[in-house]
View (cartoon, rainbow, N blue to C red):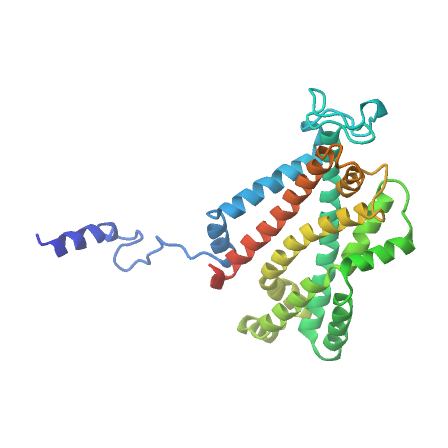
Length: 319
């Protein structure tokens, strides 16, 4: 047997027809290779990316830390004694104590809950506003699109942090735990939805020209059904990417506002507030500032890396 016949026999071995009625038999369709959807193809690509795996693991740890802080430390983050102010690491506190004599690691662990909640709730609010306004503007067009597009442009031109500082100065601090938290969530969500809305609008404008939308209209489907059942699923991929990155930006914004003294205050534990207080005595002991700063940086960086990985997976041109 020649070399060519040997190679041909090896390559065609798996294609040998089976018994009648089975896949691969004469006259039967070959279903050995399944066609993946866009989401399936993206997941197939994502789970092979180290950047996606690493960022997902870090986010998972942070989420578990936010939901179950007692799994990481049993110390009370609000138990502070001035007698142990700025003391270094020990068996009782692996990163030592801050200026007020509070356990640095315990406050950092419990601060994850605040940051994750602010980021998550702000992203949900911004996502709902972006989807609703972007869908209406892109689907109906005309005067409605012109009005909503101008509103998006106006809000987009306002710096997020500047708007949040002015709004918080005017609205006050709020009361209790949920009052200040929900106030910051509301302000960040109200001023942070515009970028996602523009992406939804452009995706809807592109999707409504497709044949399946025209077919749904010919079959008598209502506009609301077409938007929810046909257009929205095909426009969500780029929105998810933008909102994933925005979640990290919202966490950074909350930490910045707390650092500047206009965000969350006691008794709420915040990474930004702890960094601000530790920065005053950084020459005496840098650990109380470095620990929450590192956790904040890792969290934000992980969400940005995750968003980039998802964007590359859903866009074939970037693979």
